[in-house]
Image 1 (cartoon, rainbow, N blue to C red):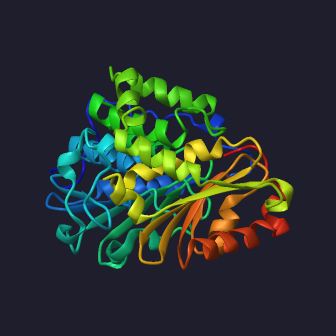
Image 2 (spheres, helix red, strand yellow):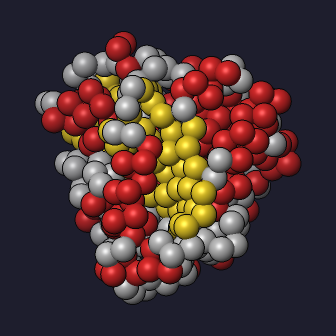
Length: 368
């Protein structure tokens, strides 16, 4: 690294224009924030220890943004580099083919005192488990995220609620660092972008999102092959599991001020019966949210004895991030989540109560 991370030769370092993807009034990183983030990377000494972390149970945006940025740091000459996430070191099967997987280490083996820790796609420190302690060590903590509920828990915070995915923030920082895109970086960021926009179906899919996708595709990655691996790759046991869990779905038209709630749940026994891993349940919210009679959809997934992870979605009439924050979680207006203890009925009753608060339906538009 030659004393500090150098400017990449032959790179224009041009910054992508994402202005078309930032809703009016959205607060994003300032030029001072970007400058501080660039400086945090460039001032690294040759033997710097860099740790990349993302939230528990990483999805495509968390893992893709982290690994894509890690590959970019490799291009800058960063040698002592690790990536990790809290909990069991299990990557969802569709994501195991991502470039940069060699950077991953179990959380128990992660560098205890990094010089720079970079956090991806975590709305709060509660999503980082024991790794949250790395943010308060002697090194610099840099946060990249796009959740509006993120309080800014790093020394430097690049939090852009107007960004469709954390990968949008990651791509811009790479550009400001002068890192040119290659196929490996692009594949990671493309997976991140496509998963968080629902294969470019959600309202957050703006003109600038497609422009970013075009930049990534220009490296030669194959979108059809990537999409089949990520979205159309489910074991038959998971298909049968989905059938059972969807069969117990309940519709409550009067909930959420009459906009409707549809919900279902999955237990650890369900997973064991069909020999499936917990990550397969992450896709369960998609068929549930298709229910025409409900604005709000919910999937309650058991993670332990009387412990649940809850996914919430809205079609636009309800701000589910307010519900999630009230119950200890966070997220976006149209997609949020939280963890809870108790029985399924108790968890659903708490959700009903929060959905009846008029504020969750005030000032909500169709932006993601």
